[in-house]
Length: 366
Ligand code: G6P
Image 1: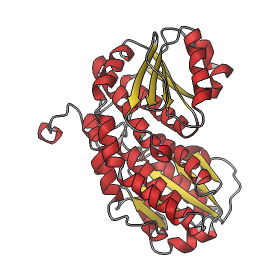
Image 2: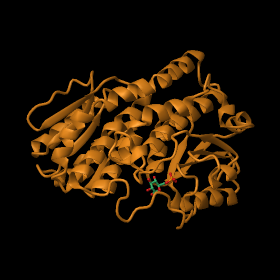
Image 3: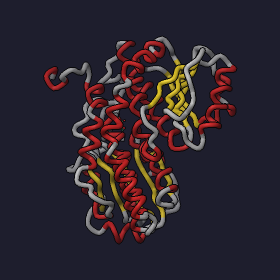
């Protein structure tokens, strides 16, 4: 009801603004990195496994795509991420030493549950879920679990569930690294410090809303949009495009920026805005040259940069500067302006933001 919405117009907006609290709750009680955060017996499981297979759908699949970068770079564990509905219907090569990780807000998505059971049927008994509902079928059926504390999510387009999943997956990365003897005490302390600062960092990003609203005024007039990211931020570009198409019905696609020249550049005109997630990381210089390719074809850029990115607004280049540079946890912050962009674009177009056409919050049938 209206009372629950408080100052917000829609549940989605409220849920976007709840993210600092949701992340704080999800990390509450985490004093140090120990495998037991994931349940009794987790240490044995984490020592035994030599690879990870992530299974999920929709937005939860994209959080898995981001986690792959963490798992391989920080924990050094080979990781595959697969859409649950594909995995269950193909021949794959099972390994009993693979940790099967499902990611699901509801814990009831039919395809994800079926994919878990399929993996179990193939002899993969080491299972773990990152889930937002402690009483769900998924939590019952997996050996290990981390329960995110996003709270009830009502908007069909997932927001706070996504960022809390990322927090849980980052903890999983650290716990696996620790069980494998690959996490120094110094690194553990530094990661924990960065995680504890996330609620404040998210609050500072939410304060960018007025700037995002001015981008949304432009986007509301468009029928297509392209999202670019590289590395860890490619999954964030995918999630930004998904949010925009789900609720504003604008056709949006995401590409890893290096693929631009292999196809999507042919579509770039002034009618195709290009959103670029551009934190100052190892790939920034390459990303800048991708951006010049867009400008040279008359494309208009909307860039999420951070203080050290040295990208300034100019003709055809609109920059929103992120308050802080955040290293490995940067995806949790960069997704927020993209959630707000989709939200305000949809509001400007007058769509039913919390209940987009043809979509359901939880898909419990195949
Ligand atoms: C539906 C929802 C999405 C969600 C997906 C997976 O498609 O509309 O927002 O990401 O299901 O849901 P799950 O509960 O498994 O995370």
